[in-house]
Image (cartoon, rainbow, N blue to C red; front, side, top):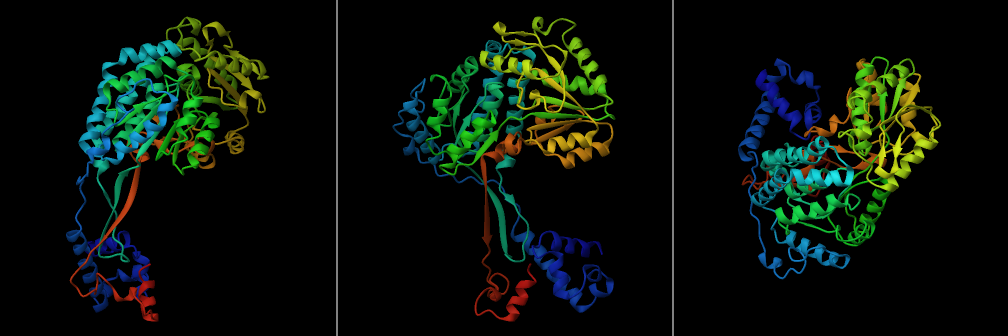
Length: 559
């Protein structure tokens, strides 16, 4: 019976017709097909023999697929380049030639071999390993980034992604076999992994190395050429990115534009005048709409990693002190300038005062009882305009300041702040992108769910609850790009979990294998076998006219 079950398993799982078609063909439900009486009857025995032949022929004739490279490299396409690998400090007028030459580089086949991809991944790894101090110095200049944060986010996280990709790239590149289908039998079918082509990566200023170079790494691993535009808001980091890319990376694989041009808007607009095969952008929803509109002219697919006002659900069953600790830790990383940062906490009304007191205590603990302004572990706001915007939120919230609220505009410093507000507060309207945690008392988690159902879908969502039924209820009745339960940020750091938004917070995802897949087209391929069987199995007569009722009956049994 075990052998019989495995054959029916094969039939149900791999044959596209499935168990339903087999049952239909014999006019019996599946449980009757598996009785001893049927199996040892002439029709049952015939069915078993047929399935066994199909199974053996499929496994013997169509073994597993392996990566077999047969790449045509046209070196002549790379002759006479005027910009790529030749010019530095590219200007707006260089962009048309830059894009054209990066396309020629891709079309030549230069970036396709596994060996080339690995060479560039290892070069990028050396770039991070050998320049940790320079990266942290640039982050300090732009953001007063604490050394710990700089190393973890903009060195170790990218290195982890690179190491993971190096370890798995050959497996990811292999064609992926797909199952048996009675309709197409005999055939072998698979998904061929092919690069999209020429990719444009438009970076962000808040984690400039991680948010620019991890997508670039994924695009390189997938075999694309890349045009990278760092964000000039963090100008020291943008200049260093170009310097390091030019030093370590092959310009025929990845080239930069932007830091030599004032601002970001004109460079981005110039890039959007040209056809790319994928555009990857990290930034605000407003700019994301501009990117999507520009890409639509060429029907270019986009991966948009945008922002959102990320909620925290704090149930009465939660460990309140732990919820406050983990929420404030995440809120104040990079002085709150993080797209996945918890923005506001909806706390059960019976626990809201306890939560606020715990927040005050943890801020005091994090900074050794001293003002965060004096601490080496707290950063600064990136620019004067951003400081002014956050100051405006501090003046208009109509709530009660629990702790913090101090501002030193000259130093671009805003203290870690907790403010208790009511639903309808201006503080709950726009993404804060600063070190303020808004706290709202709610009757229960159902009230919090209702509130979130009327808002734009956030990039991240955080749930603190000891009751698993409450966790499941929130998960099933709300939507977000990703969720961490009883913690913050961690779902974004797991290599097997794609990171990305939904709706207003973005589209597409990356990290781990998802970074490879983000820049890969999974091309379906079916290789129809040609057998010397007179067409009995390999070219069934029922497909061809003249069609009869009998042929239609046979076809019905294939679906």
